[in-house]
Image (cartoon, rainbow, N blue to C red; front, side, top):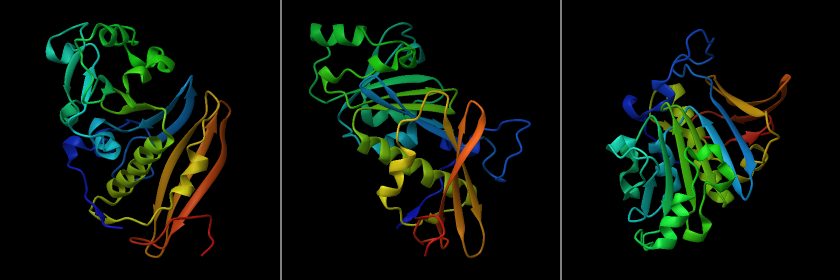
Length: 247
């Protein structure tokens, strides 16, 4: 695979966030790296920590001329009002934001569109099952809190897989703190990790590096603590991820 470039500190959630008192297993990434997929009504929700708008926007690869509706535009001095902007510009948004995608041709002045947008929950995660207006052609909604916790709401599993793969790649590069030729990843490996979980379950991710082998561990937690571990290995930079230790 081509190299993944290390994201600058100011837009890198893995390097920006710190959890005081946590015994971090990685010297550079000092916030627990967690994820979970849940079924939210007709939607799939991918929760990622730490994450932000910029890497998710890049992974989604939505046409730049499509539209983004920012709910509660207090960032722009429009408290309680929706603000429309080009999808291409959403990576300027950070910290606290709820965004809903609309295709390029949707006319915002249409009363039916205004009615559908008025029904959206604010914040989106108050009712995630209602956060994606499919009747308007929306394919994704994003919720980011404190520049660290992100939720992606979709109906298409492929969008989920794209964003999760980018999350893994950005994590590896941040741990190494340098541009990295990432191991090849067969999308079929993602299936088990992206299956919807029961409420209260989540994964924590760890990367272990040695001169010969990289190990990526996904530790499954539930209300009673750790319950299982899934493991990928690769023969280092530019290798190939495999489940388990088979070569």
